[in-house]
Image (cartoon, rainbow, N blue to C red; front, side, top):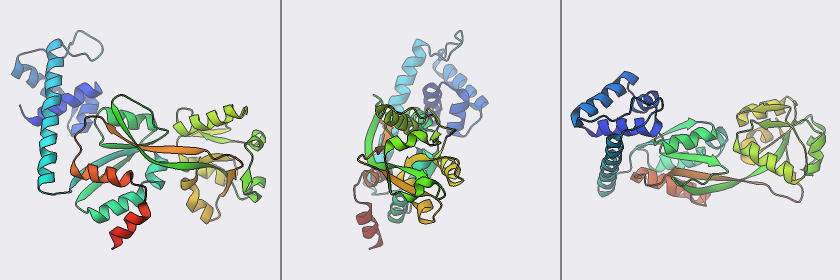
Length: 303
């Protein structure tokens, strides 16, 4: 048995999907099935209970899975410790995040990090929030970045920073002449929102409930870029994270209004699976993302 065999098997059990395990390891579904049968032959046991419709391990399979996890943990830990001994900061870091964070919050941090550690490769995948959690829990991604982080016993949640929600309108909209707006004024407006399962949509719904406002979106989208395009053509107004509309406001494509007497924060967080071995590169990136002074770090990098 090789470490790769245990990795494929572990991914199969975590995801309960032959196609997912195949994708994670860059092989075919047939190859995953062959690996499973080879392990059963090697240990002379039945690993998966094939009498069940759902994916389920036998008692022997559960024991093998637990041991495989321990072997993989020790292997990853050894690799990490050897890198630290050599003072090497290299490798690939896989990040899963939603569009608004990946496109507008993350880039300056990645720029500073890669300037300081050019031997590291960062791969970013743009996913819906629920998929980011799934990616982390199935160990298919190293780090995740989400808004309004959810608590989970298997997740380590580290604060990134807080964004501010603002009202965004077309420059042609009557409200564009204002600098601030009372939340109640939104009741008569056409509202463009995110789809119901997106955390920022849930947050705005809660804001409306607390203000006793009944506002139903005339349009719903699954990412911030599409929402902005709809507002630009004056199809309605929207509540969006302030950092996502900086460019459009500067170019005169959108007008941004702050809310009167109230600041609505949008907490962002870094997540990774508890107990995961973090490589030196991952530790350095986590330190950067959870630091509070990006401007100072940018200055240090230039010097």
